[in-house]
Length: 301
Ligand SMILES: NC(=O)c1ccc[n+]([C@@H]2O[C@H](COP(=O)([O-])OP(=O)(O)OC[C@H]3O[C@@H](n4cnc5c(N)ncnc54)[C@H](OP(=O)(O)O)[C@@H]3O)[C@@H](O)[C@H]2O)c1
Image (cartoon, rainbow, N blue to C red; front, side, top):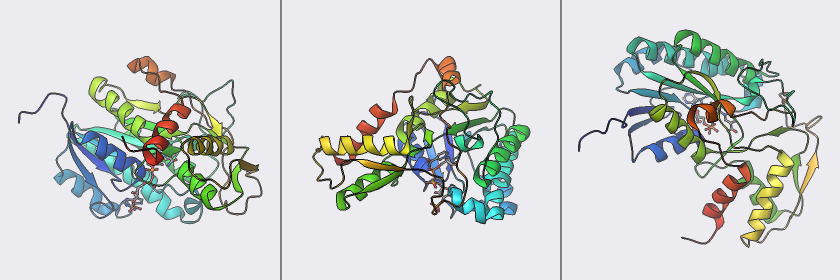
């Protein structure tokens, strides 16, 4: 079979993660996709990374791997630094050396969370992370772009999707067996469907390969965790799931003893740059979560 000009050799790191699995699944029919997990490349074993990447064959490297537990980053600071900063820096250097494209995934947690309904955070807003996760991810962004100015850093937020359990699945699971379900009501962001995100990233690397720097990618609209959970329960109820809890009870994130790290309160991001480049407006998160939950819990097609 001859290779179409749009077909790329894509190496995905973090192929066992929520986003990495979505990327490998969605790109496989159209590209030559290689997925590497921790077994093939351990981000903390930084001395091995340059050689591993030098020997690999790819046109595009996408890094969806990272230490994503916000609370673990607070205590395992050296692992967080190696994983979220040093390893992406080495990936960027390797891509710059061979002239390969590099897309690195980052987070809305680089911001202090001082956006509001009238100001969705843009790529021009100044980041000011409140915790080690955000600090190491921001340092990773800066190191990536310094080593490989043609790289694209995609900041994403609150991922959900079919490949790994996430917040809406946990809320529904809890509501099926408990009369009361709790969620934070004073923290807002943009819930984002991993399948949509995979498609936006593909639009960028296929149709707009010259795009570099930072780009915000998330579904439109924003919610508190409580609102996000309530929407999931409303859809689950419409789908006939036998819920015990029909509402989500809100509580403040302040004084919530499970949280070791401080969380930024409002980090909903604007996707205006993405729309200006591609002409694509991400759909509302409520439409995306409906599709996800219907696929997960609805009747078979
Ligand atoms: N999930 C969200 O809501 C969210 C929000 C904002 C930004 N992001 C960003 O989006 C990206 C993808 O997130 P995700 O939700 O897909 O996270 P995830 O499910 O936690 O996946 C991260 C992957 O990184 C891998 N990893 C961790 N440490 C590693 C190491 N030392 N060596 C090799 N691999 C390692 C994990 O491997 P194992 O499977 O072996 O543990 C996992 O497969 C991350 O950059 C994250 O910062 C996510």
